[in-house]
Each structure stands twice: as structure tokens, then as C-alpha cells.
Image 1 (tube, rainbow over the protein chains, first blue to last red):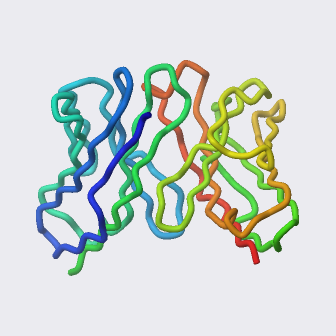
Image 2: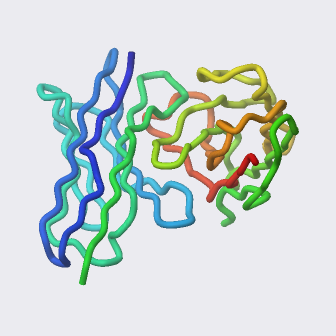
Length: 112
Length: 116
């Protein structure tokens, strides 16, 4: 079946540190890949996406590259801020499908 | 431009009761999906409505049912509530039925349902 596995959290970093949150997937066909962010008490917001192999999605200083050979879509940011504290979800959609398949989420806390 | 709105924000019910959750999609969107997010977990797809019909369903029992109205708003109904139904219920909207590869879903803030 189709599934997403994220690195276990929680992750705690100091402000301005480098961030990596690992995400790997199992899918039939050629999925599109997404990162969503959930701030406390809110719904999910799309952070970035990539629709084919070697695509790089980027937004607000975050980046992730679609790696078909390693079935990965790791999220990175060069210098995190306190405001980046949230739960991050990696997700996929199979071509033609109508549902997102999510990983379990990674809670990120940034200390000043 | 109004985003996805859900009501109520919080709800407390007891086992065996029935509940109805409501969702208004983002302006211009015509497709509504519902997800269940248990505490500490990622959202799980319940079902999707397009043109007032259920188009796709996840692995949820028949106690979960829904409806879409002509104005594209939607309801999620859950009967015979169980303790395990306690979760955040998220509504997401998108445009069209051509797949989500290029039309990402927009999520509401959810309804927190607690079963006592």
C-alpha cells in the first residue's frame, strides 16, 4: 500500500540551527509529495510540494527535493526561528487519486 | 477571501450519541474531503464529496456518513459514537475532481470532538 514514514519526534533545536526532518515513502506509480505544517490550535497549511522526480519545492526558507531513487522528500531549513515551532507532516498523493496519505507528523520546537 | 470554515470548534458527546460536523469550503472550491486526526497522529482520510456525491472513501465504518449541499458545503455525521472517535476532524476543500497533484487541498482549523 501507499504510506509515508517520518523521523520520530519531538525535535528540539536552538534558534538559527540547521533543520532536517526525514521523510520516506512507499507508493504505487508516481506520487506527488507535500509538506504541511500545523501550528497549535490550527488546521494544516501547505508548506511546499513537488510533483515529479528531482523537483525541489521551497517556501519560507524551507526546501525539499523529490528523490525517486531513495523514495525520500526530506525537509530542510538553513536557519530556524522560534516561529517555526509547529508539527510538520509529510504527505503524498497518487496520480489521479483524491486523498492525501500522511505521515505521523514531527513536532518541532525552537528555543530562543 | 474566506478560507475553509468549520463548526463547531469543540464538541463533547457521550458514547452512543450521534454528532454532525459542518464545513464550508474555500470560496471557489467545489470538492470537500474529511479527515480524522487522532492525538499525536497524522490525518486519516474519511471520504470526499464532489457534485453532492461521495466519490471516494477511506477505511472507516458505515457509522461515518456525509452529505454535500448544492452550495458545496458539507456535513460529516457519526452515529453510535465510540470513545475511539475522539479526535480532531478536519475538512479540506479543493477545486475539481482531476486529482490533487496540482490542486492542493486547503484545510480548516478543525472540530475537536471529545467522547466521554
